[in-house]
Amino acid sequence: MISTTNIDDVVTFIAKFADPDGIPIIVGKDWEDLNVKFTKEEIKEGLSEYISRKSVLFPFRKITVEDVSDKFYNLRTTNFMDFIMENPGTVVEKYDDYQYPYSKHGKFVISFGHYHNDVSNFFQQRNRYDCGSHGFPSPNEYWYSPDLLKKMNWTFWRLDNRGINDVTIRESFRLGAYVATQFKLHVAKTLYDFIFSRIESTHKSVLDISMGWGDRLAGFYASKAINYFGTDPNPSVYEVYKKQCVEYEKLLTGIEPTITIIQVTHGNHLYEGFVCVGASGKTVTAYNAPAEDILPTIKNNKYDCIFTSPPYFSTELYDQGGDDWKQSWSRYPQYHHWWNEFFRPVIAACYESLTPTGILMMNIMDPFVRGFRSKTCDQMVDYVTSIGGKFDGQIGMRIKQRPRNVSSDKLSHHLSTTYIENIWCFSQNGFDLSMKPATLENLFGE
Image (cartoon, rainbow, N blue to C red; front, top):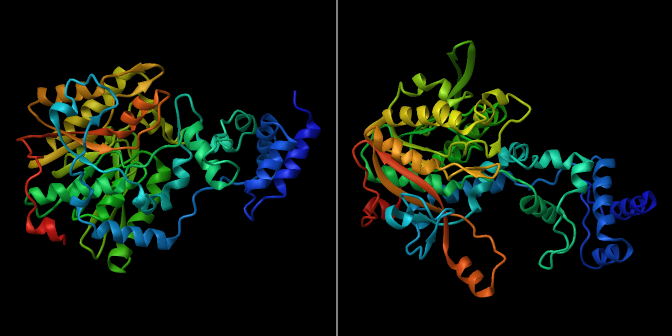
């Protein structure tokens, strides 16, 4: 048992190195001195006590308005072809037993990258850290619970990044806890611009039935798409979508857009939405509602591009403790209920809402919850084709490979492969996803 005296001494030591926000910066010789004076367990417990006693706020990444502006313009002006891998090499999926694998149905891979993530993370970072998962509390739950913090798998002792500071604290949460990941903005921009380089449309309309952290919304503003219709049941992110729309529109035109509040009813529930119309010509319509509750409203329109990353059954626990009755993980705790009452009706409505030349794209992998994998992806392809749809193949979204505890030769091969998340593509009449020679528009951008 660690003595109270030792913990008090650790807290006193740590406090000497606090920055103006209370975050301890202990690296180099100071880090060595701390480890000479105290054991690893004493340091862990002392740090949790220090955070609790001093009411230290979590060290979120500091993102400036200038960062948002610079990265938005960079994304806006980069040709989408620059994000498509010329030679992806060996492509590896999370599961090697899909009925419709990338090896047979793959079309192209979009490159890895997170440079542009700040454009939406500036607005939604705190909301992401409120999101937990099965088996893991949210980062904010960890941070504000001394008991949980004492169990935290801190990574301060790793040879490549020793010591305590804001970066190593966030890294510990990324590796030892659960941090909801962002969707890559450049992937959304690439797919929107790719699709609208292939089809003629005056509306250039997109639908996103699970807006998430506002990443695809940001990609929309950086793309050539004109109309965006989205929905999400999380009230916290919904309120921030309005701010995103205003700021992105001002980056495009310098003029504040007009936001009009709208409503839709479902049974006894009244859901709020908004319409944002800007001088850029772009229009965003968003509802703070579960997609399955407003399917008639969704089907009032036709969409050229339906692109979304729906909840992977109950992998992530959005808005836990808030209006979580709206969330699919809360409404449908059993997989067959989630499939029959949420995902299948939403897929059917999306398919019906496609324009004759449009495309439906679903970024989803088989959910693995409580030790059981549900084969959602095969089930989805089979279902869409059963109602007359065409399976047009897969687009790969490259994600970062994680090292494995294997021999050096196997590890080298593992890290050299192109690991992807799947984007499954469907249409009513077939959509050509092959990489044709670039047009003049593609070559020279806008």
